[in-house]
Image (cartoon, rainbow, N blue to C red; front, side, top):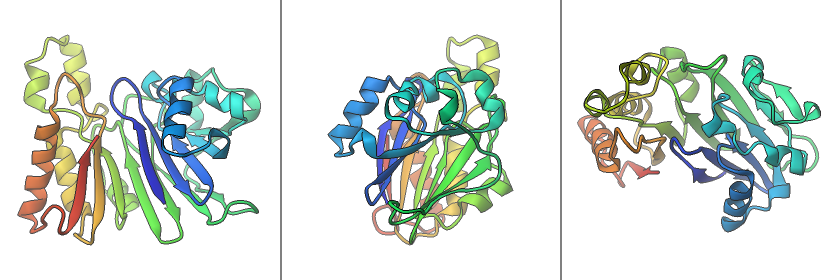
Length: 251
């Protein structure tokens, strides 16, 4: 399965996952026209997008959902998240709970299975997703204040990890944000710090060539080099060397 991260960060998030001729989008947080252009830039025709899966209803994950109306694409999100999503035609609305969604009927070769798991964020029913196709397993974990055992179990044995490494706590504390915003970011329903992400990857990565993407970095409270260093150091302590045992990219 091919991964293209079309957008990442507080200004918008959108990930394209392609298997055969079929593409799944996880989140659509940039303008519809930008999604169309970025899809075409990586060789994906928008009419080949078969579904959009939303992690939660915040605007940096849903801004581009008019794309679904234009191309008649079904949109999946936790039932409670639809309270804050109004930009999708009723005939395209699909609820996702704990059950997986399998695309294996005629025209979908190879098959694609999307398995949701619960995360911890200040939204009604936020989700992470595991995407499987043949021998590929990809885990996507964005916007969560902590990682629990159920999340670890859902993501383990993936070949690709797309996970947020949002902030450095000392930078948040020293920022000019209001105290309420600082508390939200640092809470269990906020965002993952660099160390939380590194600790999570230390549990998950086995050193069999996994691809790691660090995403959703704060432009104000993090630096790519810092996020990268924190994860590389944690995996080094586990005896894993970058480019030998795993690959890492900061988006």
